[in-house]
Length: 165
Image (cartoon, rainbow, N blue to C red; front, top):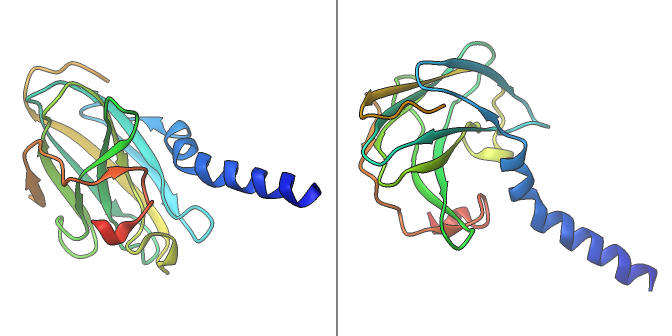
């Protein structure tokens, strides 16, 4: 019985981890630059913003210390509660810095993931800055890869299966 309870707890924790990652995120507003750090114990972080359909946004992650190889991914929760992977970039801002320019297809909350290259299995670390800019659009809410608002077709939870991307 003890083994069954322990197994159930492990399964619940594994299933809750992606949701907890989004729940532990912080806001970023258009025109704002925030800072964070990546290490072996904290290899990614999520920032969120609210955008409107048609907003053209740009976000840039730059390493400010260490040997960090920045990597950005944009996510949006869909109507079924799963997370849609929208776009990712590794070196779009030059060197080991990342940049994404993207036109939002729908209004709502978007999550910017700021991991290091190769996520948990990566070996780089350091501090970074993340800047979010509204390039065009009407939102007043809180160079690199350029894309319009269409999903890659992956739907699920972040890091469920990167091989699908």
